[in-house]
Length: 347
Image (cartoon, rainbow, N blue to C red):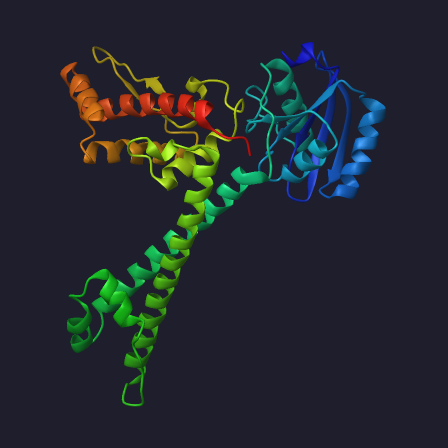
């Protein structure tokens, strides 16, 4: 327990422009409270105040350490402070009270009352991976939207243009529309339509090029951080990247059960009457859950022998295909967690 190792815990509720800070002692009593701006000069002043009110041994419990709190985590880590990650806070169950000051106290008490929390990491290869995956996601979404708009415009296009473009494959359609030209013989509506089709096609092609470039960089980072992870059946570079981002580093997630809970793959009892069953957790990290689902579907579609045998056995035991898939996602989460702990490289 953290209370066995420190005299004070400094809880921080992070926001974009300012952070709320609360200092508690090892029994949970509030010693001091403060508000600080989010720049190094303000952090330096805050650290001086903490030195006076809460001498070491101490620990910082920061909520939002990977987003609004990243700057503070970096500042404190560079100065040898012990920094702990606190997951998203909820309102008090009884009073439903919520202020920044209350959340700062709650962050400190949460760290104090539980087993030792993981130390957050900012920067490095894993942060680079998170940024690249987020950028790739927006590029994929942009390409999809541009293609949808292009096809919607074709529905109302004049018959000659619709017949010329309507039967083309996606690749040929984009290439043809990207070369569309306008001239004085086109009326206003035809000119606008051609310009819209060309713009959508060029946007989709640019997004495709961006996605390809990001895929190469993501693949290189995944292989650097977790050599051999992509050798696992059904694990592609994007799924591997998402798993790595959620897992982050050794010690952040205390057990494979906690990893499965974060992934939304932990079974939740859903028994009623004579029906005894479990369902999936719909909360937690949806991107990680999606990565697990993609891995399982890829194994099934590629007729992975162990996957097919596992699902057939579960169905023979009376489970539905959906329930068997849920069990397989839980098994996959356990396997990937252990695999990451065994093969990952430090950033």
